[in-house]
Each structure stands twice: as C-alpha cells, then as structure tokens.
Length: 157
Image (cartoon, rainbow, N blue to C red):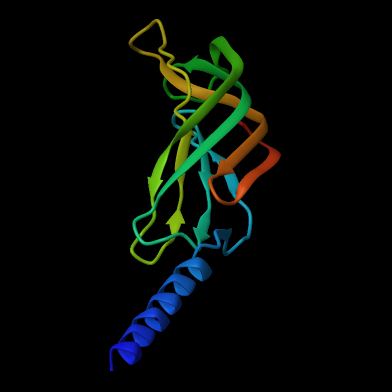
C-alpha cells in the first residue's frame, strides 16, 4: 500500500512539474511582434504587444533602447497659423521596468516607454503643438522572449 501511494505521489508530482515546464514558453501572440505609436499630445513613445506563456502572476522584466527627436511649436488662436518658436529635443535613452503576468500567464500593452519632453509656450495666449516626433533604433526586450528590433516610428503634423 505504501509503495502504491508513493508511486502515485511521484506520478502526480511528475505531471505537475511537466505542466509547469510546458507552460513556461513565452511568445508573442496576435500580431506576433510589438508595434509602436506616438502619443500626439505628449510626443511620447508607446509599445503595444501581447505575450503569453508566462506563469500566473510571474514578474517579467522589460527594457528598451532608442533614439528620439521631438519638435514642438507654439500657435495662437484660431490655431490656423504656422507654428512659431520651434524647439527640438533629441537624444538616446533607455527604459526598463517589471510587469506582472495575469492569472492566465499573459502580458499586454500599450506600455509607455518614453513620456516625451516638456515644452511650454512663452505667452499665455499661445498653445503648444507637436510638430514632429521620430524614434529610431527601437529595440524592445521582453524577458523570456528576447529582443525585438531595431524598429522605427515617426509622426509629422
């Protein structure tokens, strides 16, 4: 009886561990790769993705690196004139953090990788407007899947 019970416990443990090992196969689902967009109100960079194959509640690290160039300008009402006081900011930067997989082992975006750059017009009767934004050499790395890129995305008014 003890041998039978021990054998049954060993079989159940084997299948339980095998199920965990099979579930640990992170991969992108849906479009199969991340897509990028620019928030036209901030000039920020967002990544949209869906990944599956993580454990329930598993913490997953992500990182991204990219180059950016963002140009802002000022317009006066009725906002039909050409922007004045153009200011361009550019550079190379990185972003990283930790996400938590859902109960079903999935992660999804959108996820803000870069919030943009601060800009304000010198006069109270002017309004800020995003003229252009471009992100190049974007490499997004999701733990368990690996790096994706380089990619690029741009916006022009």
